[in-house]
Length: 95
Image (cartoon, one colour):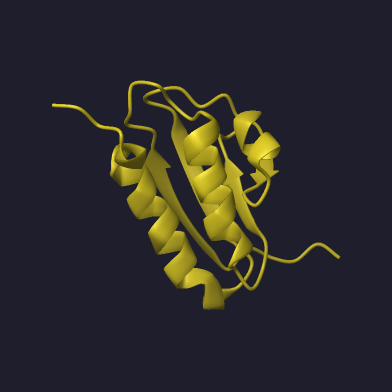
């Protein structure tokens, strides 16, 4: 069954290393706590955010725009948490 997207937001990859295994694993862990499917999209591909491998296939480098989507309004806190993780540079920003 293909459910409709209820929530979405945009963000940008800020850290030098882009999306690599450690942040992908943390995002997948956050997405697994959701009530519905959380999706990440780069405009060309849409992947399940609960899958580390799927996330890595986006090949998101520094400056890449990423669209975060959820199929349920109940996942607003998860969307906010993932967006904040992006905005924090995955905890890897250096001065």
